[in-house]
Amino acid sequence: KAGVTQTPRYLIKTRGQQVTLSCSPISGHRSVSWYQQTPGQGLQFLFEYFSETQRNKGNFPGRFSGRQFSNSRSEMNVSTLELGDSALYLCASSSGQATNEKLFFGSGTQLSVL
Amino acid sequence: DAKTTQPPSMDCAEGRAANLPCNHSTISGNEYVYWYRQIHSQGPQYIIHGLKNNETNEMASLIITEDRKSSTLILPHATLRDTAVYYCIAGLGSGNTGKLIFGQGTTLQVKP
Image (cartoon, rainbow over all chains, first blue to last red; front, side, top):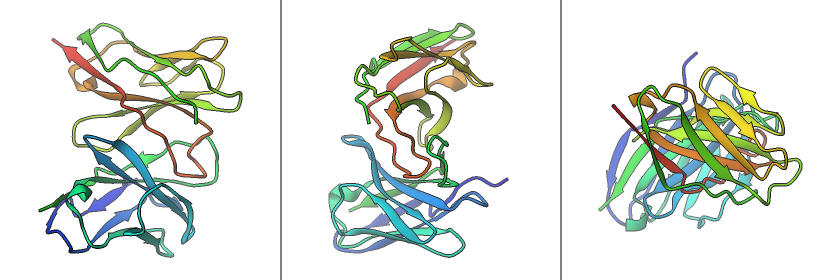
């Protein structure tokens, strides 16, 4: 079974631009969640999608948005990039139905904002 | 989610057991204890989780105290590939929320 796939692996953008990151969950998983990891703040939850609907949201500004498609693939968009958006962006998938199930993470997209 | 406290770093000799402690004194009765680890530049990897009873799988053992205020992750025979940041998380579960509250974790260095 293929794992969680994130593309691209690395990305360099400049301030003010926007960026779209992609995540393909494990086959059969309907929940995709996104995390931001920085050296200063650690791993922080951005949002979670289940069956094309945002089900949970963390404390990030509206510049961070996402969507999920009918095949459960998800994209995350960051508009008007700031230097502080430089981070490793991780997505994770699960079936989304059992409370205590584990999350499967991808390897992440390393975003650098110049 | 309950607050967790872990030592920032630990060393372990290769082949020896690594015992990683975690304090979660404010955990509530229906909150689980989860352990994930993150090897440099990769996404976190699930290790094990438990509610009340001790648990064991092919990767590790989880020992939860009777009062559930603390737990210990045991890697029975640590290898160099176990060098990673280990996160202890106490919460209701991420399966239907996607949300885990990660702390700073413990950096485990396995030395030859």
